[in-house]
Length: 248
Ligand code: ATP
Image 1: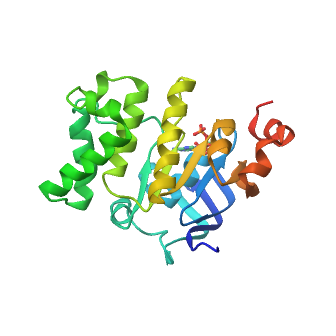
Image 2: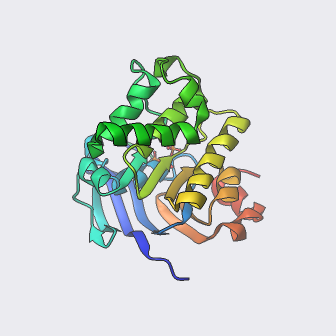
């Protein structure tokens, strides 16, 4: 079956402060129902690429200087993050951003505000997140800032899910977390993809974990896409991993 292209990034270049060139040719395609991994060493441009496609570069004095980004058939380079969230393109930023002084549940409720859920719908969406991450149900009354790193990452993902994304974009969900916690987070993401068909784009420095769960992967080096292909073709290529991703 040929799946519909949900996101396409073509030849995107970007700078910060009109000076520092961070991206110099990013190409990426995400089809509906896929899990796509965006790989690359520290500083390769993963975060900048994800920010570019979610409308978040301007906030950091960044600008797209060439190329095209299309989501659901439309050019989105000029859209605001809020518009993109309403259109179903939702990002979980690097570093598990939660509101530390709000409870876990209030963090989730904030995530639902983009959709203006009714009270009943809000209940239903909360239940959905608590079913996916039972830990969050236990911790729902705790201040997010006092929960563990893994729980904060789950809260950040849960908050994004409350907006009912069509494309969920995650920046380094494994960062700073113990291997077992990383596994449980990826297991939840894979379950969402399998059971609900949620489309995922995941930037990861941890290529081993990402390639185990992704269908396809793109590799960035110095701000450009240097490889793009089936994840299982890259999985066993230790030479590629050592060369581009700094693991061996
Ligand atoms: P990381 O794993 O550290 O997030 P990355 O692959 O996501 O790495 P980016 O953070 O996108 O890489 O960085 C790409 C390049 O852009 C780097 O050279 C970095 O120094 C530069 N850069 C990133 N953010 C900014 C910023 N806000 N202002 C200026 N330069 C930046």
